[in-house]
Amino acid sequence: MRIFVKIGLLLLSSMLLQSVAMAMKPASTNTNAVAILAGGCFWCIEADFEKLKGISSAVSGYIGGHIKNPTYKQVSRGNSGHIEAVSIQYDPRVISYKQILDFFWRHIDPTRDDGQFCDRGRQYRPAIFYLDEQQHKIAIASKQNIEKIKPFKQAIKVELIKATEFYPAETYHQDYYKKNPLRYKYYRFSCRRDARVEELWQNSSP
Image 1 (tube, rainbow, N blue to C red):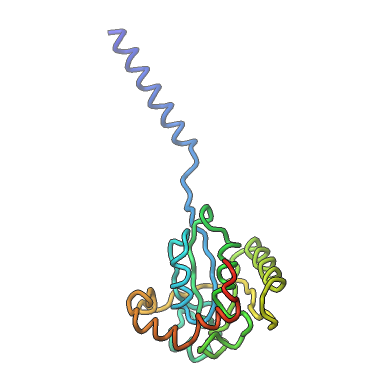
Image 2 (cartoon, helix red, strand yellow; image 1 turned 60 degrees about the horizontal axis):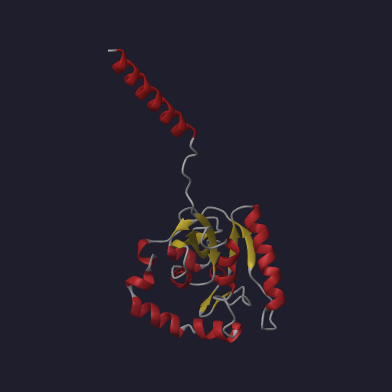
């Protein structure tokens, strides 16, 4: 009888120790971080970034304006104050915010603040929306570096803006390049997006 009591006590002690250990173990954290970038048509920015390793999702949307829950029509008219942008979720263990910005610069036309490629209007201008002071510092350093090494003479006109509420765009805009590949490719080609990027950056990495 005493043997069974001792075994029971040992099992109980073991269970208590396991409970304490579990309670003391740090809770698992979400490894995803967020970057919000604007570079003209959000279909194109979304498509470019979703090909990168370490990016878990890219959501097209609107940010920076004065209208709550804006629609595409309101934003495209240019009087909402919003800019077409993409909210990018990424794993900082795989890709850093700095690397994301390095990629961003070389996939836009940073010499224009009146639109991008064939899209005209301030609602299509390029911008980096920083979410905190750390991102702001990295964005400042990144912009300063690009100003030093850029292979073109024109000034950099990309704004660094403190992020406000991001509004996801309508469902039909999400993953447009996957849902409508022919229309997307025709739009991108006719806008000369890739041709202009190559002209500016001369295939410089990354």
